[in-house]
Structure formats: C-alpha cells, structure tokens
Length: 396
Image 1: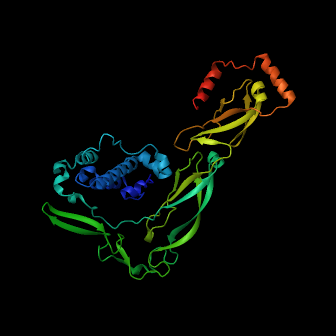
Image 2: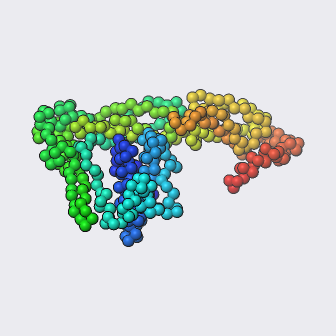
Image 3: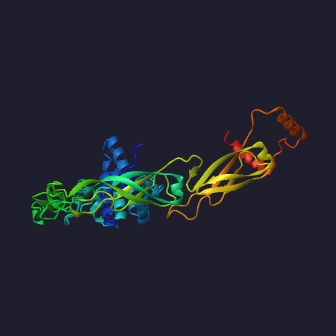
C-alpha cells in the first residue's frame, strides 16, 4: 500500500496557507480530478482521477477544519486518525453540486461548467504581489522509551539546515543597491497570460520565471552563498516532548526548519516519535499490560507480589485460589493522555499465569497425591471461575 502523502503536499500548499488558500487549492483539485471530467477517459485514467480526487478530498476535510488542522500540524496523521475524507461508497456526486456546495452557489449560473471546454475560465491563480517565500520543512525521528513518554522529556536532535548567510545577512548581495526590481514581472512576482477563445478572454497567472515569484533579482550576488542568501549548517535543536505521545505522532517545531531565501518565512522541524519496545510492558493507548508467572503454591495459598511500574513499583495481592489467566487492574498506573487527547491516566493490567513444575521430588509427589486424595483439588469451578475459563477457551 502506497504511503500517504502530506496533506499540504496533496493540495500544493505550505503550512502558512489561509482558509481561503485551502479552499481555493481544493477547488482547483476538484476541477481537475473529479470523475465527472474523466467519464470518457481510459480505465487507467479514470482510476487515477478517482484516487487523486479522494486524496484531495481527504486532505481538504482535515485542513478545512481548524481543530483537525491544529492536531494534524502538531502530530501528523496520528493526530487525525479516523478523520479521513468523505465516504464515497454511495458515489461522488456531480461536480457542479460539489462546487455549488463549496462556494455557496456562486457558479450556478454557468450551466454546470460544461460549456467552458475544460474549465479554462477558472484556471490559474489570481494576480497579486510578489509572494513571500517559505523555507522547506525538515523531517527527523526521535527515539523514546516508555519512561520518557510517561513523564515527558526534552531531547536534543542534530540536523542540517539552510541558515541566513552571515556575509550578506541573508540578502544574497553584499550591498542593498545590488537588489533590483525584477524587469520581467515589475516586482509583482507573477506574469499574466491572456488567451482569446470562442467563449471570451481568459487571464491566467503563473510564477515569474526570472525571479521565481520574489519580485526582485540580484545583480551582484554574494560570493559566499552565490546569491541565494543561504548557507548550510549543522545545528542542535531542543525538542520538548509532551507526556503521553504515541509511536508515529509528529511534533512540530515552528520555524526550526530550513530558512527561506531573502528573509522569507522559516520552514518547520517535524519530529516523528519512534517508541522503543519495552522489556516488560506492552502498550495499548494509555493502558499498559504486564504478565507475571507465580508458583502453584502461591496461587493456592495466596501471597503478595511486587509489580514493576513506570516510575516505581507496586504491591499486588494474590488471593488464595487465584486461577491462571486471571487479570488484575491497577487503576491510574498506566500512561497519561497526551495533551488535548483526553484526561487522566490509563491503567496497568497484570495477567497472572500459574507455573506447573515438570519434575517433583518423591516427597513433593507424595504431598500432591495426598492433596488429590482429599478432593479439594478436584475441579469444581464457581461462577467467576467459569467466566474466566470460558473467556480463555475462546482463543482455542
């Protein structure tokens, strides 16, 4: 199964995108990939369009919701698990209905878009000023133990990133006079394209090829950074890990990614949590599971045992007659819920297994024989025992 693409990448956006940017990007994707547009395509083209449309719709369903977007920005896919796009089992709905629902019927008067010959009248981005560049995000991983996760911690990661050039202060030129307005776009960062067709005049805009959307060009570039305004450096970054994080979650450190050329917006550092296996505990969400083996004598007579727990140890009473497979719960001895995903702590579940010896001495055998003759060791389960045995039997 193909790995999911980042939702911002799917819609061609960066994380600074506004709500209007997100809606506009989805509109553009819907116009391009909705299955209504590919009814006359090949089977392969139809399948590709369907997959692309579903992918874009899922991205939009998350990024257009402020709460889901905040969780996705902080924890990645793990933060919005189960919050995917629309259920398409009943079909996609018409493209005209979709866009009318999205944009409040603003396009209802155009007859379902069909008359625009491939939607040319809506193509391209609208004109505006030079864009503010944003640095690329950096992804890295951080290994955490359950002990780290239980209490939260601060870890240091070493990364290589683009930083402002120290010789030109990130401008790309030693002198401000060497930075000129782009002659191609006149500082707008975009160039206009006009197309005349049977249906009228259409204007579209694209990024200026000379200045790459910045609106300025450097005539005498800095020799250290070759005019980019950036140099590569290895740096250490402190990552504050909140208690309760889970494997695969993404921690976002705003502005700790690559610097952008010429004073733009820094990218983010995306830290993926990699939870290390624990020697004693298994984890399921905020709950922990531990298995303890006891002797036949302890199971029959009862005892008190010491159970390991995160941050210390706990005493657990074993009642006389405890059956193998019995599970006891220590409330509040699990993991905390990660901030914003619940309250309180989980529990620690302890499963008791009774060890049966394979070899006995003569005196031990005689003692067991006398027990057997007494009749009290003959199976006669009570109601609680029966429930336990029935539960265990489901595995076979």
